[in-house]
Image (cartoon, rainbow, N blue to C red):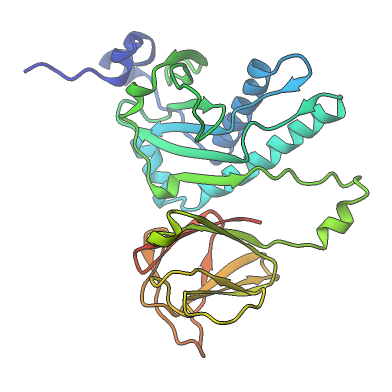
Amino acid sequence: MESKNTFWQRIGLQDLFLPGEKSKASKAARALTPDSIYKYILEKFKESVRDLSFAERVVFYHEYMICFNADDYKEFLTQKQGLFGIIVDESVKQFYQVLRAHTKEGKKVQPSSSKWVFRLVSHPDYERGDIGFIGKLLPGSSQKDDNLRVTFIPRQTGVVQTFDVNEDILKGFTYYSEGYYELPYAPELDETDPIAEKKKTSKVYARLDTIMPDQKYAGKKFEYLMKDEDIVVSGAEETREEPHVFKVPSDWVDTPHLRIRFNAADGKLYLASFGEKTIINENEVKRSNINSPDWMELPINSKIMLNGIVGINVFKG
């Protein structure tokens, strides 16, 4: 029976990235830590600025696929749950610091997309300690993906290697909802900006969006900015028009369905569900009485499913 070619054999880099069993046995896997992943993502962003920028225009990747060994990936999802989201959040904060420095140098920083996308994935051909990177300029655009830039750190040398691949050979990569993060492109104002203080008064605790499954809306996206510390997510039968009510005009959403509040003490969001069925990041939420809410933490970059039909994404405000 013919053996199946590995990912690295298909792109002709088997010997460089995946040495023989004897060599593998003699090399100890490098431990991946949150700090090493954070620094790796930041370095890839800086490299994209150096590689893509021209004249006085600063250009950079908006989509980042970070690739791990399956066991390393599983360890982060189980034993270090929630760290991926924190790493992504801190990385984007540093992206803005780098871009702000270029702006002060007089360069033009103009994003090619309105969002950042991070896909943290695993692949069966990666060994423990391997980490790779694939960057895209504009997620969701019509740009051709014929030449995706792949950067890889082989476990045996630790030396960065970069090459181009066709997107078709990336089909072996897998990721779960916990490994997908989408953040709006929203650079924070410089503290020396004279209008910064004014804008700070318009605090947005979170951004919620949903694409309607109902035929009459034909996939229309509804977005809601959480400017109140306590809001209600309700369905088509909702009659209130107050700013703290996010009305999702779908019969699949109960009235009311959710209550979300911001706790200033710890800076976190919390959710209580009154609807028939609510799932957060693939975990079902206990239904509570509207007069006695049962609160649970709602992490930023979460996906909420209402009655298995309507999905609501929760992003940082």
